Image 1 (cartoon, rainbow, N blue to C red):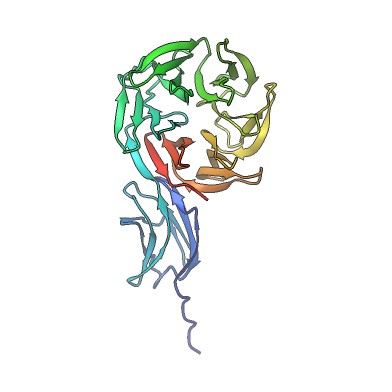
Image 2: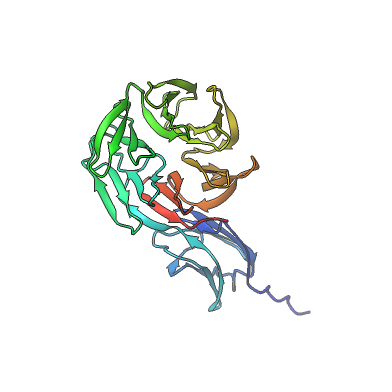
Length: 335
């Protein structure tokens, strides 16, 4: 009786199909091992060495030099390919601790926030649509949260002095518009121009136009930063990461009442809504870190795999701008 022939190599599932360096991709299919030897795997032209390999499953860390797809398996010198998207790295040497922001022209702003109390000469970074990286001299120490006003002024919180600054660009001249806000971190503007400021020690402040900042909501203290975004339903959404693996996204109504929206999540941080009203958040679920998307309050789906992700924002063209603790990436629009 002859031995059964090995199944033909075939890729059936790649989860997720988008990633940035440090992420982990799971490839499911058949016939991956030839003579017990794992295949050579390439993401574009960069080799990705499987951390786990069997005949039906590969687990692939995305290497730092991966710049473009597709994902290709070389099995007995025969290539098997499937589409895969690698986020374009726009800038390195940055230090975001919250969401980047993108203006109407597609210009991206992020930070070199530094250690607590570290005065960085050019703590703000501007990335043009053409990809030019420009450093802005500005007054705030440890700029953290960012928000853009309709007139183009950039708002930034300082977790060092507990203030919010209004910066006139491109010069970077700064005006303090609120102070005594504890460890001021995440910022968010709603459609009425009301600014919300997260003090990671436990308070979300509300600052109306031409008004004074006042306590609005209470959340558990965070080990990192409060991250805020305004929802299309009129509610405010927030994350307050702790050392627990049981964190949640909070939904805060117009009266300042906070309740869990979804959990558990592992260290949820930056979050934003897309044009379709879907919520995207950088977080971990059962050890799988990346960007998750929520649709109609259903279980989140891992859309982008990546490591050390802290923030995200949608550009006017719906490209997703993604921030890690040291780099900014651009991801093509999702359907």
